[in-house]
Length: 256
Image 1 (cartoon, rainbow, N blue to C red):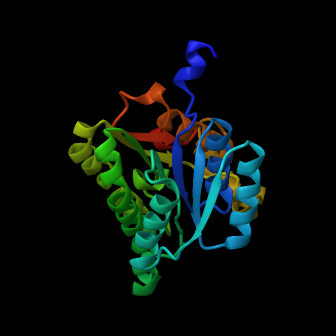
Image 2 (tube, rainbow, N blue to C red):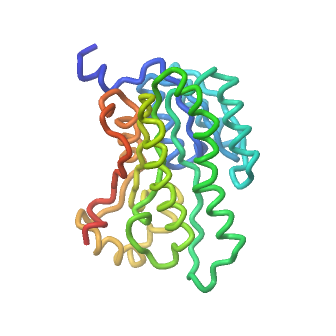
């Protein structure tokens, strides 16, 4: 294996991916397994998790599936415990689970606000709190929080979502501040609209997509593999000096 390949390899690492049953999370599981990691895949949808387990197995890697409701406090806490029971320690945590209710500020219900904060912000905190002690003990670890371009720019109807993701960026920086001394790198990835099956359903209409594309210098939305490849870079030794950053994958949207 050549030197550059070694730098991007995560062979034998143990990765925990939340929101793993579909979309970006499922793509991340595929890419990390292809690069050599065993996977603890966490989501609410067991059927989707079973498909991910099959994909991971096709790469010759082990996949443990864990169902959890991240809207509760117990869900992420128990998921972290089960991941540790399966692998003893986790080397890579990818906090990908999230929801995005689209509502004007004046119509945003307290129930949707609280659920968004629980899944998008509290759950990553609890997952990291559960898994970081083993990373600290082994003096190495990677935590990658999937945020959004909406964390750094304003988008109509995204108040709860934007606030939760901006909080996730801040949490990323605080994790870095406390855990970098233990050789743990924590970074946030902030994608634009990604053409997952749900993304295509919402944004496949060219008339609806046109205003967003007009504001995007590159003139297109992203694909799940483009987010997963950034996650692989941040999970690999190639990124060991990258810590506490907010990595925008937005086709230039945020510069306008």
